[in-house]
Length: 369
Image 1: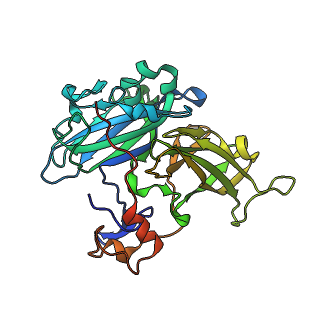
Image 2 (image 1 turned 90 degrees about the vertical axis):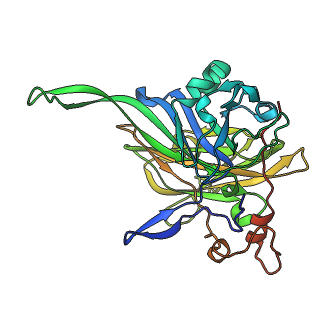
Image 3 (image 1 turned 180 degrees about the horizontal axis):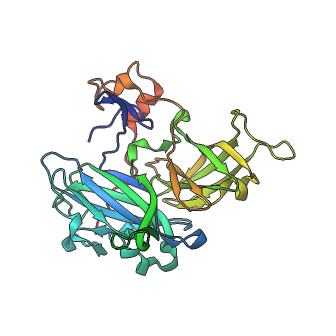
């Protein structure tokens, strides 16, 4: 797999049909979906997540395996000790859950799994299956052996988390009358490649910004974080609040507004109405949250201390959510990305960001049977 020598947290500017557009680097053989749901939410909402996977290879069919990391658990690393809790496409590979659509996805092909958490992990995890993250592995079809060895291949992953509701629409058979029909509304949360997460190994890439946080009579703001580190690393996450003027907000005693919490290996955590529940703020808008890896501890030797965050701006009246994607504070190295330099090239003269990008190890591998 190609490892880009600069982090790619910001979109690449392109010109399509004479109008400005953007694209992100999302293809990978290891992808994290920061949050997926099967739960009843606020004000009668019923949240479900559909997962869409596209094979971007030009010649090879791919197989896909998926793990669910339930929220709130202190340590989810045991889930990836075996294939018992994994979802795969072939019975012969020993997956605890099997969906044959995940096997032999053709080049350019796409599959969608509806209500993925409810369909495959509700019986296994029970009440713990309401919320969590997903880990998606992709490999050349039929190459996974009993020990976990396989040929890496790339996919793009998108998720849609939505509420089921009804709407009133004009009755086509009766002018001036309306009929009720089922409908959904929700938010798209893209899968994040393993190379595009916040990384404690490089200072300027150890934190992400979530912008435009607002909580007032009409809007609330939720924040979530997934520990994407290796299975033996715990991270200490710190979230700080900054006002529209860019100055860190303070409490009544003049202390900077922030809170910290530990995320065990592969743990997910979400904070609803974070501005009021964690910072005591109300009637505020355009707040920027800085989500950082403040520290980490590990029992391993292959240490990859990383995380990914996300925000959700929710309308209080309709419960319609808008995804707030995280951003790094620095742009990616354009010259590096579009040059002929490869992961095997000399690092002489390269900046620290580039060196980190080249040398970062993979945090997770598919377990053996």
